[in-house]
Image (cartoon, rainbow, N blue to C red; front, side):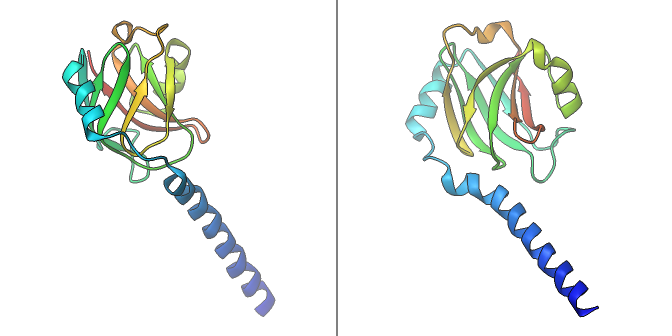
Length: 155
C-alpha cells in the first residue's frame, strides 16, 4: 500500500511539474514587448480598433485577452494583455467567433497573420498580401492545443 501511495504522489508531482512547465516556459522565453511609443504610433494610424474582453464565451481563467487592438494595413498592435501560453497565432476572420467550435468551423475562411510571442502588448506586421479591410475580426488562437484565447470585432 505504501508503494502505491508513493507511486501516485510522485506521478502527481511529475504531472504538476509538466503542466507548470508548459504554462511557464512561454513566459520565461517571451521576447521583450514593443515600446509604448511603437504601439501608440499604430494606435494613432489605425484604420480600425476593437477591444479584447475577458468575458467571451470561449475564454476562461487560462485563456483570455483584454485591451485595445489597433489595425492598420501594415501592423496590428495590442495595448493590453493576453493570457500567457505557447504557440499563439493571430488570425483575421470574416465573422466574429468566440469559441473553439466557431473558430474551427471558419478557419478555412480566415487568414493567419503572424505568431504572437509577447503577452503584454504586442506588435505584429501584416503581410502585404493581406487586406485587413476584407475581414472584421481579429482572433488569437493557441495552435498547439487548439484553444480559443480571445477575439475582437473591429468592423
